[in-house]
Length: 140
Image (cartoon, rainbow, N blue to C red; front, side, top):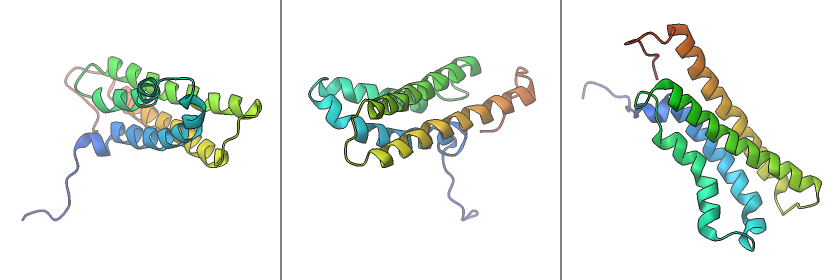
């Protein structure tokens, strides 16, 4: 028992972990807002795929497992999907669709995608600091 601290996997504490936690926050808000709206118009499997696709991208495409460029593009696409869904919430609110709890859902959705960009930005800054030299990688 040489260490008393609990060691988390890198993907839970590094830049990807930051994006994952933010995506989960956003997912709660987006799912709550769109659940009644999509229930009659879209099959359940399609709604689940739409909402979980960004989470799966962040979870399964990790830094160090693929080239930094591929991972950065995938994470940017995931953050953009959440951003598009959050902007769709605003459009829905403007046209009069306001389910119960709309303000709370909007706060969660916008906090999630906004801070997900922070994780992407931190990783991009760390990569630019090292100049993307072969064999040198920023800490996760």
